[in-house]
Length: 170
Image (tube, rainbow, N blue to C red; front, side, top):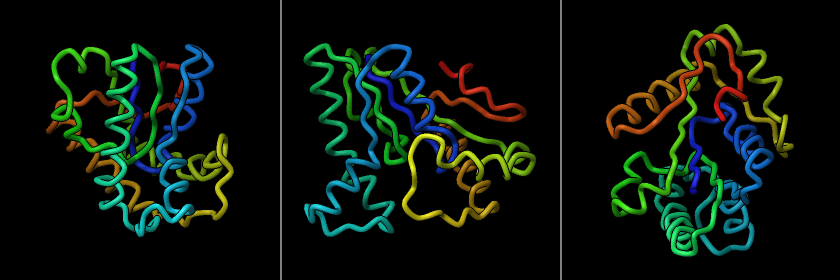
């Protein structure tokens, strides 16, 4: 089984991946780690600011990792925001049976009511080197955009609206 976890920044992708790793003992790949390895090793001229270009660049690599895992009948959890919403087009019908896609989406209500918690728990798994300045308006817009894209491409999503119980996602 391949488990893909995506969503906006601060939605709990890494926490969910960690919980799934602990439950299923599947290996786990953070697309952010792959991104930083490629940037720091100078294997790309892209920077952390090149989000749209990074999605295209990284997806080519991640897609082939997924295909290799399927061919070898190996499980893996892959998380990160660099998974395109039209990802299904890159796989045949049999491959799609092996892939579980989850997009974590926070509603505007949740973000407004729990903004302090979102910031408080941003380093619960990974210690971010530089604290991001999280703009509440941008966070709401990004989550709304992700919801629309999930609907458009008929992707599975988990809507975080009232209470955030990460254990209910697994």
